[in-house]
Image (cartoon, rainbow, N blue to C red):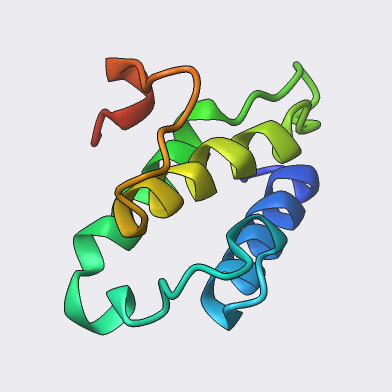
Length: 97
């Protein structure tokens, strides 16, 4: 079974804006250096995005914006020690598979 076009679109959009440094949820946060210096932080953001993403039976993504918020809030929290993501992350959101 292939991934749906809806999933591909949501993932591609998230990956593009995250790696371009233009993700609107991370405005003012200098996170691009993490790609070379601390790639595990970037990996964790992608993991959160994928773990939080929900799809219906046809593969249509239902919550791309929420998944992006959870993932980008992780990077914001990682880079800005004064920021705290709400609600706190659940183990299933952070789980590496």
